[in-house]
Amino acid sequence: MTAQTEFEASGMTRNTQWEQIRGKLRSEYGEATFNSWLKNIELEKIDGSKASMTLPTRFLRDWVLNNYANRIRQLWNTEDNSITTVDIRVKPLDKKNTSSHKPTFGLADMSEPFKGKKPLYAETTSPDPSLMAPLDPRFTFENFVVGKSNELAHAAARRVAEAKDSVPFNPLYLYGGVGLGKTHLMHAIGHGIAANSPEKKVLYLSAEKFMYRFIRALRFKDTMNFKDQFRSVDVLMIDDVQFISGKDSTQEEFFHTFNALVDQNHQIIISGDRSPTDLEEMEERMRSRLGWGLVADIHPTDYELRLGILQSKVEQGKIDIDPRILEFLAHRITSNVRELEGALNRVLAYSDLVGRAVTLESTQEVLRDLLRANDRRITIEEIQKKVAEHFNIRMSDMHSARRARAVARPRQVAMYLAKHLTSRSLPEIGRKFGGRDHTTVMHALKKIDELRQEDIALSEDIDLLMRMLE
Ligand code: ADP
Ligand code: MG
Image (cartoon, rainbow, N blue to C red):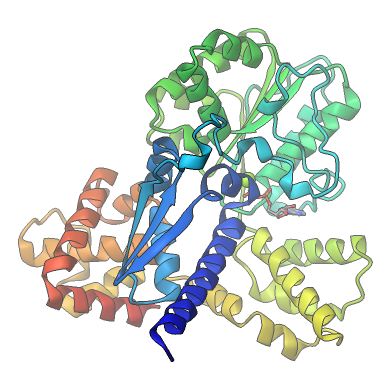
């Protein structure tokens, strides 16, 4: 192979790897988040163990670095285990495009997930259509399967959607892990209100979008208009409120908007990935405000609900499939509904492609990676145990306050592994290590990252532990 073709070949695989990673990001974080923050990341180069990428603005870059860089790094590492760090820079201005001031964000592009279909906006007299996220036509109450784990959230959502002149609970706060139906229920409320009270102005948007709009309004000195628009709605829904955490001015604005609407007796519906009291980075007054109305949590699914959801999907799609396959999936894909649906779709797509009916064998074959991941979710306890064994310290030292290097370092390694091998947040990890603060965890991650550059033995220890745990 000449040097030239070799280079092209590796460029090809790099691009394929990058496409894989983009695909995973899109499915893990969902279409809206992907379009808002991740779509415009471009792969620049791979240099040894470092993957370098770019984003068009500093704001986007900072946000992605803070929120998604770790996951991107992990995904690169899975594609190519020699890649251990990532770097995201602001893309130098393209000379040809300097005349265009239009931001290249994907936010205006919200209709993309609903290819071809005209998006339905729930409000009648929209102040500014770019504020709204369209409601997904599939996310209705009819398509929502009720089980023990989501019955309270579902009943509360119905009540809010059907209330004509009253506000049953304010706010309605829905929380639960990813992929358990929070967004689905919120859209269903939106559809319900549009049907029952078409005169009502409903605004649904993600907390990220709220924040983005607010920062833009600040930048363009347009906050009056921003405030008016938010405060003139009858129903405000903010999805994934945990993303507002920690951004002071946005929190402040959110708090005021919230109070103004509550004072006018307008309905607010909020979703989050944890309970209001666990939103550590949210100001205390906001946390307590969020818990004033009805707080309904959605628990992980049980077998019956998972099977019910699969059955409802195949009925809707008029799909002919051996019921044993559905039972198998409901049994084995326990993580969340999004993965469960994804698994069913993959199995169906495969059978469509090869032109053969789905069998138990083909299902197992097609879903091998997913099944393995569902069988084996590493817990922080397992990590602590392995690390303690490896460094020959006591398990209790993972929680203890002892700061001697001989125990502190392994503890930091365990935190580092917990961050990289599980999807737990920093505060959650801190809590599992004897109730430490998330900043302590952050410090540990930084320390270990630094040490890995200089201390080859430690770096090898960590790689070994990672392999054993995975
Ligand atoms: P969350 O917002 O909690 O992360 P979503 O509302 O996006 O989760 O749900 C993920 C996927 O699972 C969606 O496609 C949704 O329609 C589906 N889903 C979740 N719960 C149910 C349910 N009880 N019945 C039917 N579909 C569900
Ligand atoms: Mg959601």
